[in-house]
Length: 170
Image 1 (tube, one colour):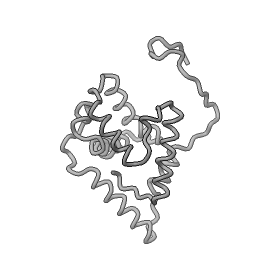
Image 2 (image 1 turned 90 degrees about the vertical axis):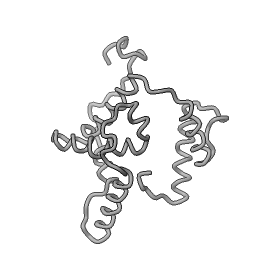
Image 3 (image 1 turned 30 degrees about the vertical axis):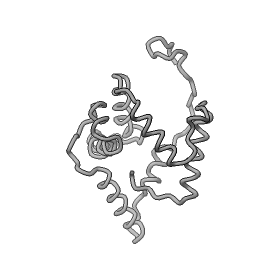
């Protein structure tokens, strides 16, 4: 939906990785997808059965979206606001639809008519600029830079209880 293009081999590899991840998480073989069309059918069925989001889901979804600029180390408040409100929320709204977006309290209903089309066109223009020598960092390389971290001082600690209020300091 975001306009990425993959070869048949890359698509197959992508699905193999997610199938294996599902296997490792304990998803029974009877409901573990076999290929892309099966995965899409399972998503369609799951969407029909999905209850409305809880308050915790609403808070988590918005927190994740609003944390993206911080993870990308964007410090300027105006730039962070632009990224969240002009790019991430409209794209999220385009991906999950207006009904779920409204349930998740995502802002911006109707502000951008075709956010996914606009995003895909922007990506094509960037790719065209790169091909003719206007070297601009690709979104993928920007994503890699944002995800790079220095592991010094990292600790992989987990909470000792499923509810944050009952967990000790970690």
